[in-house]
Length: 355
Image (cartoon, rainbow, N blue to C red; front, side, top):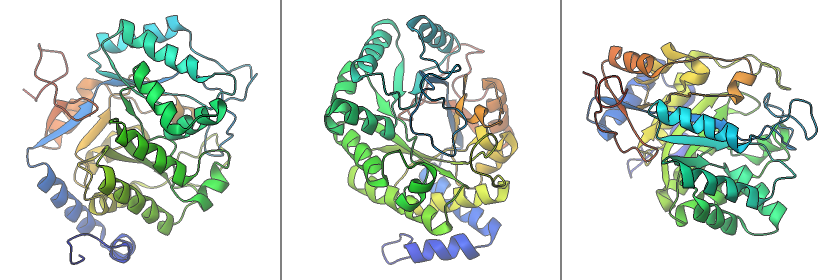
């Protein structure tokens, strides 16, 4: 370790490339236990709502989007949106995650009206609009990203998801998502959101056309921003799913995923929470992730469309998530986006500690 107790880039590279697999896992788990000494693993009950699949980005890794005018393109109606939210609340959900494509015909007022519609009717946290969407809205309106964030916050936006990060290295982004915002713009949107009092998450989609050096650059960029703002609640790495996309390669293995997860926990020493990705890796690997640095099992994913479009369709109920956490030796606790624990409720409510 460096003199200040933090991993340097060189040390992180050495560990990532040459560190023994189980030693890396043990080191990451030790850090996780120091940050969270209570034997709990958290999860959130929410739903991913893709308000539209229309997008002009054409990212090579995306199997979900449709171009404008496509026969399978859609924009959710208010009735469809209401039905999804009502079902989420009925299942004990506390939030919705809303993301969509870069729709060229929807102006900022559409999103403001959608937020106000939801907030006027439902007691639910809205976690929505990733940085590339914010940058796209700013270009459409001819206003700054800061003003876009302020207007969305005023309309009811509660927090911002870390989508669209992919790999925060422009040489990679220019190949896999050339129409999307730059790494600097992604980071700037997150910094501005933090300055305006919004908490956000951070992600990494890896295993496409990046190098180990690129992955490490991504992690250190996040650590640097977190040092300035402290606004990230969690980091979520997940593996690229190549099926039905324009990038031809084999998926990452369980070992490569757990290795990246462990080095993330060691590098991101100023992040409190690291999330396992059962949606892409499946429940067994996600359970192992609880011993490679992860302290959170992520979302119940009442609905998920983007990863499913790439041919991956793991599904878990609240009861299954709780059982997996318990069988790993931890107590399952439902949480909010800001990692506040949801208190015990009536039996069968799927919240609180294990019985």
